[in-house]
Length: 233
Image (cartoon, rainbow, N blue to C red; front, side, top):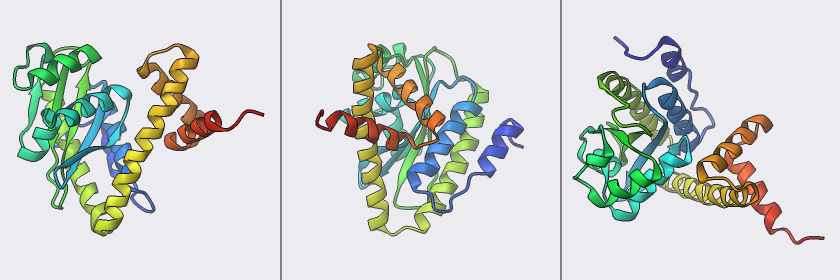
């Protein structure tokens, strides 16, 4: 029996894959995970191909920063969950000793608890669903059960999308996702400078503007960056 609210389950079942990139599909899933798993502040999905991890979908800057801190070090719960197939629950990051260099730095960024669930993907990819919270002990047994269910849906989705893509197309999609993150970071920097706000606040400004204008986040970010780079009259 599903541990997810009926509305969340309906959202999962209503996701459409037609004409969508892997990045776009997984972006829908992380938003559902954030809304449907109790205690979650931000969510992301790490995919690993040929030992190279990257964030395929994320809901906010906190999640992306936490992921990137692990990629820089080559270890951490999101990488280890994906490669080992082990669920990694961290109730209080301040007391975590398995990845001391990572945990100390991510606490400074505001992550005090996390949950990483491996994705049982039957492809060349492995990965994990990463859930982050700003409070210790934010995610209990109910969160774990709900996260497992969302992760199972994500794994099926990845399998469905990848099955229709050859390796070259998949690699191109991954490259596009990384380029998308780079331009979003540039746009965030501009917003931070203009509004004297934090990275999280800049991302939220960008996200709200994207929804209000009904344009993709990366397209809006690209427009901002291009405007900044255009020569003044």
